[in-house]
Structure formats: C-alpha cells, structure tokens
Image (cartoon, rainbow over all chains, first blue to last red):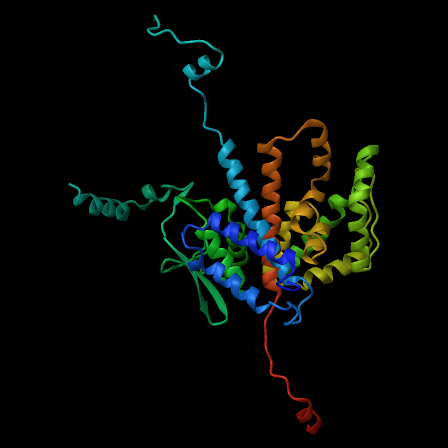
Length: 108
Length: 275
C-alpha cells in the first residue's frame, strides 16, 4: 500500500470486500472478523507500508494474493458444481434425448 | 419410541464402534455457526463456535501469524451446508505442517526441490517454431530476472534431456531454500508441485510475479493449444482456477510465516553517546 489514496490500492480493497461479502455466511459485513482486521491494517498503513522495515508494496501484494486465493477457490467450486456428473441417465431420458418415447405398457 | 432412540444408538455406538466409524465420511455437514480466532501466548488458534479447530491427528491447530489465522477462520466461515475440505488449501497446508504425515525434515524437502529444479517447466523450450517464439517472449524475461536475482547461470534444453545444473547453482538454491522454516518450505513444495516449476514459485515469493501471471506462464503451452482448439470450461478453466488458488494459498502461507514482528525501544542518540 504505497498510499491508501492511490487507485490500485482502493481497487484491491473493494475486491477484497466484495469477495468476502459473497463468501461469508453472516449477513452483516461489519461484524465479520476478517473485514475488521483488513480495515485495521489499511488504516495502520494509511500513509505508507514501509513503517515496519517492509519492502515497497509488500502489504498490497499480500492483499492481492488473498483476493486471488478467494476468487479462484470460489470459481473452482462454481465450475465444479455446474458441471458435476449426476450419474447415468435413465432409459427413458436417453430415449427422449434422441426423440423416442417408451411404449406405455411394454409387452414382455 | 422417539425418546428411546438416541439412547439406543449411543448404546450401539459404545458396543460396536466400527459400525459407525465410516458414516458420512465423504462430506460433513456444517456443524458450527460462527468462526473466530483466539490468541494463545504468541500463537493463534481458530475457533468454530466455542470449539477449537484441530488437525486430523488431533492436535490443536496453532498458527504463528494473526492474518493467517483470520484467513483460515474466514475459509471455514465460507463453507455453506457441507464442508468442502479439498478446496480449503490454507487449512490443509497448516495441518500438514503441524502433523507432518510424511515425517519429513527441512533437508528432505530442500533436497526434493533441488532434484525438481532441472525438470523445471521454464527450462524446456519447444521444437515447434510458433510455440518457441511465444515461450521465448514470455519465459526469457523471467529466466533473466532469476539469473540476475540469484547470480546463477541457467541452461535451456530443447529436447527431452534435462539441462545440466552446475553445483554452484545447486548450492545457491540450497542455501536459499534452507533459509525458510518448515511451514514455509512445505508451502513452497505445494506451490511448486502445482506450477511444476520451482523457478516460478520463487519469482512469486520474491514478488516478481503475481500468482495469476505465474499460472499463466506455467500453462503457456496449454494456452497456446487453446487458441487453436478452443476452450472447455470444465477442463481448462477448472484447472486454471484450481492451480491459481493453490499457488495463492501457498504464497499466503509463505508470506505469513516468513514475516516476524518485533518492536524494540530505540535508545536515544544522547544516551548512546554516554554509554
């Protein structure tokens, strides 16, 4: 966080909050411990993140890594849920797929 | 009947524990409402409601850094009705570091990574003209950065033979790997296995590349083929999302376990002069 007013830093903060809002299960964002912590850190390093003998951009890089992690873990779950196999199709379903119907009372 | 039922099952469980051991073994329902963290001396624990989170071996999950503990708590909070443990990489990495199921030491992992190094993805360039041009455009800058950063000389292979790696390079890398503690090294190993490239993982740790970019470079050939053959979401995108999340998780653990906070009171210049 070179400085909190710079554009990329604020974009990252917004992404973080949006990911947490989508994933967290409690409704109120301000009650979330992670959000409180993130805001605390952002305020602490408001002017510069070089207070504690850190490299330039170290905190920002960490925040971006966390955004990446949350976003991709969510994406993986979404794709998995969308394309997950349901098992085998029934005879009836297969017949309908190719435009056939099963006879109502098939003769033995 | 209803009141007898629980006592009856409890009795059964006590009599034949084996019958109930494998129940619901694939997925577990979410059994807690909120997650939090608590401080334990200078380490951090994660709590689910009032219970402490434990590793599969039954030890309490202790984490060295506050942000990592908070991220793990957030990860458990993100589970909806079932707990999808295979996607919770941060928890898994911390569990592995604490339990150490392979009984590995720091030297074992460093050795493994050193043996991995000659088969790094970035050291193998294709024989096909078009792909090679792309690889040279994307990979050479990273290779040049790496050689400058670690002061080593790397050779590139054009066939199937792994390129020779000098003993000096090995020594430099060994020293670098051994400067990390076990938790970090375990995470590095996890990231390397996702990327198939120690070089890219080191570039991520040194903040030269972001996890997203590193995954793109590691999947360069796949991306190249996708231009021609088309993209399938349930194969390629799934793979990309998984690799990115793995690398990002490994990177977070490394970042959190390498940073240490300590505050000392500075002695004013006047007192120093008196001493």
